[in-house]
Structure formats: structure tokens, C-alpha cells
Length: 474
Image (cartoon, rainbow, N blue to C red; front, side, top):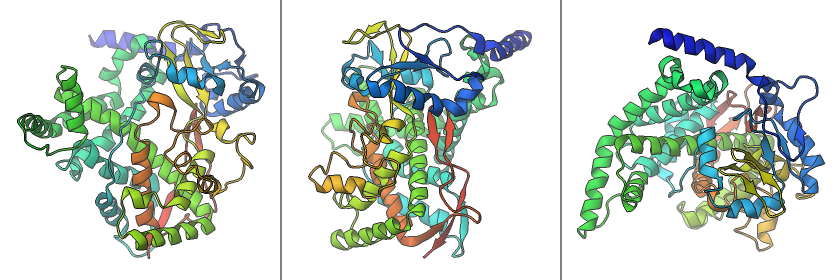
């Protein structure tokens, strides 16, 4: 058995070095690539160059184009103009599937939930109040801990939301899963990926964290099963969290939810929500440091709304319109994805205008470049903190909130699969900024004067995650 694994590993390694030479499916549309060095490695950091070229030459003229697809080397990625938005939204999942696209990419969806003020205060105090002097903090790691604790009340209920072992499992799993996703895709041909669970450390860690999660979730699931039984007998429900919602969802379809299924579902929720929310919060914080006048206005707004309402509820959070506009402008200029509305053709598909894509083809809509298009946004290259405040003051309050979806700002997606956790993200980030901006001074470390450059990897865009910001309690 071991010898067979070694032989297979050698074959997988050989594939790794020759894979860039594989042929690709031909599509009836332009295919854009680099001149000169057109290796897969170049696309990891240079995808934006191809996207800009395609956006100007084709997308703005209402035409699609295709390009290298790092998820499936043999099927180019199709980039569609926004005229196809309605068809993508309305296409049945049996033909253009978002869930199957996620399965191929190993990125997953999230859910919404209520505010969690107490948890945000607790984590910020625990992490930042240990020293009254300037304290360097790796902000992304801090945000991960913060949002893990806040969202755990929604995801696993009161039993585990403050359990350090559970939080360790969630953070450990998400880190291992991200590393394993990139590593396995890069090192193994699809036919060889069964090897990974035997020889890849990150994949082994994923299995380890799954077992740990099952052990921790066992009494939680038992309590929700008992709660559902009591409710069916006329008693009021005692729990309103993702464990109970998932149990009810499986039961409504006459399916059994095992501990492993529950653990996997919880990981799906955590991977999708915690990392993206933490990265977005770090990105917004960088922009706040770069715009001190806006920071002062937001602090004044927080004090005024707090004085008027006395407590933070969804209604009072909704009155933080300067903060909301700032967050949305930050997201416009520093989104986390170059493309959005990703779908995978389960069968050959023909759009209404005759555009045909074969089965197995992934399609997307531009995201980053829509937000930066001067034909869609006035002075698009300038950070305008009140851009969306002005729009909401003109009577479109809900359309341009941070968590709202609109056709020229697609960071949340659109249609049936628009991110359902966007309002949870909106609220927990506002609660975090309320506590942070009213109780702490924040500044860049010595030698850093402005926002560090974003990190690009294929179509993903992340703020610099390793920069230690300095915090000091006021």
C-alpha cells in the first residue's frame, strides 16, 4: 500500500510540472492571455491585468471574453457583461449552478442572524485592554477571534459560543481548509487527490478538526433534538441558532442530520462568513486610518446616535449612516473578489442572444472593475466617504446600504444566491467599530504611513493581513 502511494505521489508530482501544457476547451469568444510568459504562476498575481484588458475591450461593449481558469485548466473562465445578470439570476440550478461551482472551488455560502453586542464588547476588552500603552496587534488575527466569538452565538448557541475549545476548532479548521484547498489544487491532478488525506498535513488536520467538532457538538445536537420534540408537544422552543435551524431543515426533507453532517455544515458557515468578514473589517479599518476627518465624523455620529437611542439595536445601528456610507465606499474601492455571480454550466447552455457555453464551463460577472468604472461612479478613482450617504439622503435609503445589493456594486452577489449573511456582517462590523472607535486610538506601526498594498491571488483580493496596527485604550 505504501509503495502504491509513493508511485501515485510521483505521478502527481509529474503532473504538477507538466499541467500547464494541457489543452483547453475552445469557446466561440475571445480568449485573453499574457504575451511572453503565460505560465499558470503568472496568473496567480497578474490576473487583474487580463481583467482590465478584457473589461475595456469587450465587457464595456457588451461582449463576453474568456481567460485562464485556475480551478479547471481545461475549461476557460468566461467573463460576462452585466447584460447577462438577469439570465444568471433566473437560470435554474439544474443548468447554471452556484452550489456546484462552490463545490468545485471549495468556497461556501453563509447565513444571517441577530446582533451580538455583549460578545463584541467582551472580545475587544479581552484582546485589547491588557495594556494601557500602545499595543501592537496583528489585526486580522484579532478580527478572526472577534467574529468567531460573535457569530458562534448564532451558529452553535450558548453552550459553545464562549468555549475556547470550539473557537480553536473553528479557527484551526478554517486555516487548515484554506491551506489545503490551495495546496491540493496546486499539487495534485484531480484523479490523484485521494492521496492527500494520507500524505498532506493540512488535509490530515482538516480530518482531525472534524473529529474534534463532532465531539463538541454531540451534546448541542442532543439538546436541539430534545427541544424540537418538546416544541412538537406544545412547549415553546428554547433555541434559535443554526444547529436548530439545520436540524429542522433536514427533518423537513425527511433526512437525518448526523454529527458529521452538522460539523461539516458548521464549518461551511464559518469558512464563508468569518474570514470574509474579518478581511473586510481590516480593509475598512485601513481606510479609516487614511481618512482621519471621516474617522472623527463617525465617532461624533456614534456618540449622537448612542445618546438618542441609549442601546444598540438594529434600528439604532441603521442610523449610523456616515459609518455605513464609509463602509460601502471602502468595499467599492477594495472589494475581496475581482469577479462575482459565479456559476458552473451543469449542461450545455445557450443564452437568449445565442451565446453558447459547453457543460463544465464556469461563468462570472466582473466585480472589482464595475466598482471602479467612472461611467458608473462619478470620480470613481477617489475615495468619497459620503458617496452613498448622499444617495440615501435623496430617498434611496435601503438601496445603497452597506448590505444592499445593486447591479453596479456586486460584492454581495445578486439574485437567489446573494450572500444571505450580508446583514449579519453589516451589523457585527458596526458593533465592532462602535466599541473600537469609542474606546481606542489606532495607528499604523512605525514606518507605515498609509494603507498597505492589497494582496492579489488569482481573482481574490485581500488587504495586507500581517501588518500589526498599534492600539491604545482612551
